[in-house]
Image 1 (cartoon, helix red, strand yellow):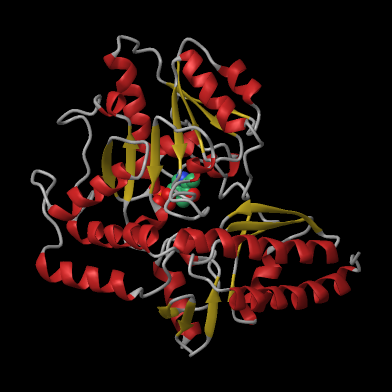
Image 2 (cartoon, helix red, strand yellow):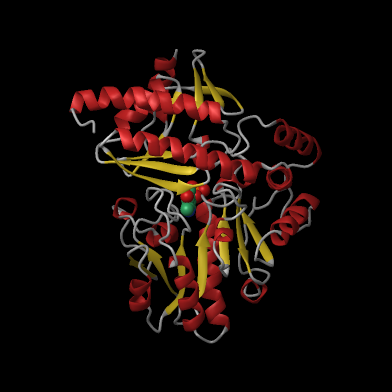
Length: 403
Ligand SMILES: *Cc1c(COP(=O)(O)O)cnc(C)c1O
C-alpha cells in the first residue's frame, strides 16, 4: 500500500523534495500516525509549524466553526477575525500595523517591498539595498532566495534579483563595512533556523540595532521560524533589549494553516498605501480564527513558560549526550528550537530514529534539529534521548568514535 502510493507520487508530483517513505494520515498532540498503523513522536512539527500539536481541539473547533460561517472574502472588505488578530499582534509586539499574507517568503517579500517604498517616499530612491547574512534563509521566491545567504538555495536560478549584500553572520563590523549610499536595511533571523540553529553572539543584535539607528537603516527581523513562541517568548526579539522596525512571521502563526504576516512601526508601515501591496488570500477569516486561537492559547495557558522550562530540560539532556559522544560538536538553541551539531552525516541518524518511532529533522546535512510542538512533555523527550543514545551507540560502534 505505502509503496504503491509512493510509486504513484513519484510519477506525478514535482520532485522538489526528498521525502521519507511514510504516508502520514492522522495526528494528535505530539503523535503522528501513518497509513500502516505506525506511530511517531513528532519532533519536527511540520518544521516549527504545529506548535500547539496536531488536531488541537480549540484550533479545530475554531476552524470548523468559521468554515460554516465564512471562509473567504476579498480584502476589499473588513472581517472580524482579521481585525481581532491584527489588534492582538499589535498589542503584544513593538509594531503598530500588520499586513497579512500566506507564507514566510511572502511576508519577507512584503518587508523588502516596504523597505524600498519607505526610502522612495523619503526622496532616497537609491537606498534599495538590504544587507543579509551568510547561512540565512528567507524563502524561495526570487527576491527572498536572492536575500538568502546559502549558495545551494540560489544555485540554478541566476540572474538573482539585485539589491542584497550578504555578509558573515554574527559580525557587526562586516555589516558596517557593507553599508553604502544605496543601503536601506539589514535583515536577520534572531536565530538562524535552516542555517543550523545558529544563535546570535552576545551583543550582536543590539549592535545591529545601534548601527541601523546611527545610519538611518531599517532593521528587519525574520521571525518566521523563531516567532510565535518557539524560543519561549512570543517573539524572539523579546529576549533582547531591542526591537526591530519590521518583523515577519509565518510558520507557527496558524498552527498549520498557511498564514504569514509582516509587522511594522507606524512611521514605516505608512509607506504601504491603498494599491501598493496586496494578497488575495491574506488574512482570510478561516486562517485568522486559527491564528487568533494560537496566539490566545500561547498568551493565556502558560505555554511560553512551559516551552522555556521544557526547552532547558531538553537542552540539558542533549548536553548529556554530548558529554558521551565525541562526534557531537555542539548543542545550540533556545526554548524549543534546539540542535545537535555532528561532525558526521546526520541523515542516517534521522532515518534510524524514524524506524524507532521518532521524527526528527536534519539541516545542513550534519545538524540534527529539534523543533517539536511546544506542548511536548519531559517523558517524550526522555524517550527521544534514549532512542538517540541507542542510535548513537550503534553509530559510534560502526565508526569507533566514542569518547
Ligand atoms: C521557513 C522560513 C521562511 C520561508 O517560509 P515559507 O512559508 O516556506 O515561504 C522564511 N524565513 C525563515 C526564517 C524560515 O524559517
